[in-house]
Length: 334
Ligand code: SAM
Ligand code: SF4
Image 1 (tube, rainbow, N blue to C red):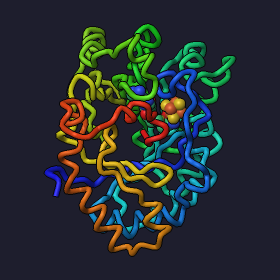
Image 2 (spheres, rainbow, N blue to C red):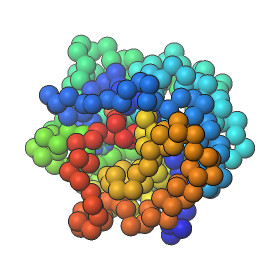
Image 3 (cartoon, rainbow, N blue to C red):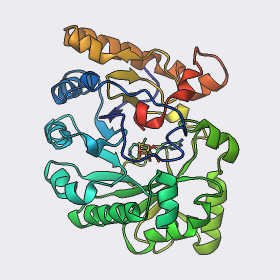
Image 4 (tube, rainbow, N blue to C red):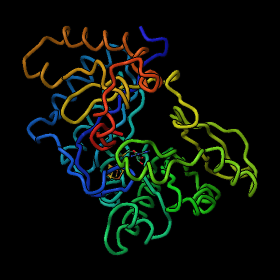
């Protein structure tokens, strides 16, 4: 068994998206999406969660994508996973474009935690980052965030991928969102996945620099929050919310990794950046393999996980291929 308790599954519901964020999608390149007939159905997903993952000790589930709110059956799936006695934590990551209309139904279905990508407070910059035209997109997302707040999602986290020369001038304004609301802003270091050209031209900004900026302005004290995973969490003294830093570039957290990822078309991968050992659960299900057989295969991957990670990939000790880099977060399930 892995030395960490692997109890967290990120489930991608769909690899497509209604945004085209500059850091996530490669510019000018065609992405090969999974065929819709290959998406895991709601029944297949529930079967896997209930009969394979929960019995193996998985307790936390995050629905993601692509954009998970584009999946028409997302509410049905949430209701089913939330109702399972083995589910201790269910959350969703979204770009919030459809959230204003869906926040209430998501909450009623049993979802309590939500992470929203919000890379800028400036409508023009937001359009530039998310590949939109005009200035209406930011307003729609902002309205979605307000709806999530009103409905009662807690904790409500706002994810910011920081890109040099694009949104790094807004760090203090974004951090200030935590002052009067119990919102949790998390700054994420840009990873070399998705848009390679942008990564090569911009590089990534070390979380330590952002932390320093915020500390100089207000001071920062150590804090914690439900489901903070690999984030280092702080708060501005007297603030209602917290500020997290996800520093996978400056401080590789592979040693603490507690998760696996399931793609929309059913590939279970042990590591975000390494496809070694991944197994095709869709094929296993559709070939009518027994639940016990599928469980055994996943159990074997759990054992192998310690040797399949980002650090191993970097040191060239695994059979990682360059194809890893051509996958986007939206394809893998970020
Ligand atoms: N569409 C939803 C959203 O944007 O919140 C969910 C899927 S998205 C792939 C999940 C997360 O991956 C987002 O928080 C996004 O910012 C992050 N992400 C995508 N590409 C990234 C990259 N190259 N580096 C760091 N984070 C990235
Ligand atoms: Fe879509 Fe999320 Fe990727 Fe942006 S980060 S393109 S919203 S999947």
